[in-house]
Length: 145
Image 1 (cartoon, rainbow, N blue to C red):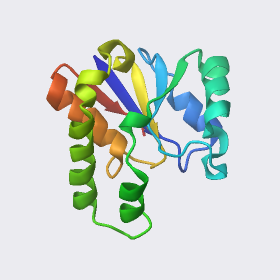
Image 2: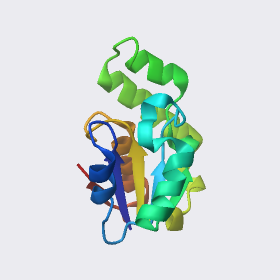
Image 3: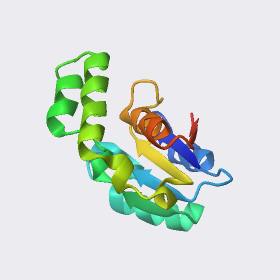
Image 4: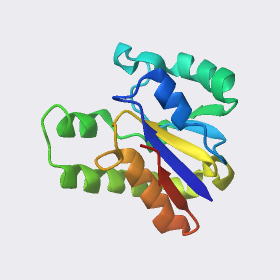
């Protein structure tokens, strides 16, 4: 199984969609808590659904169970929280939600986890992919930069 990840920040639309032209990429999986904000630009939910279908011929799926809570996000982003605390809290949330039991392997295989961070280093999309790797064991991860 292969899971891709990508962030849209600091990428113009042309570059973003060109980077998503990957063999085996079947769907864009939106794991953002907020996906309708003006700050999302060309990646607002309804626009992204259209662009995925029209430009890439791939599916678009939103999985809010793979997003952090607002409280968690605020503690990290707005209050300049520590990444290690955020990471521990988020991984605890994934375990509490038992996402490894509720997600279908078929949905994740060929899926690309979308968030806003420009790189995966300090982004929950990386944590989701690595969590599934630890739980399922048969996961290859490709972070699209």
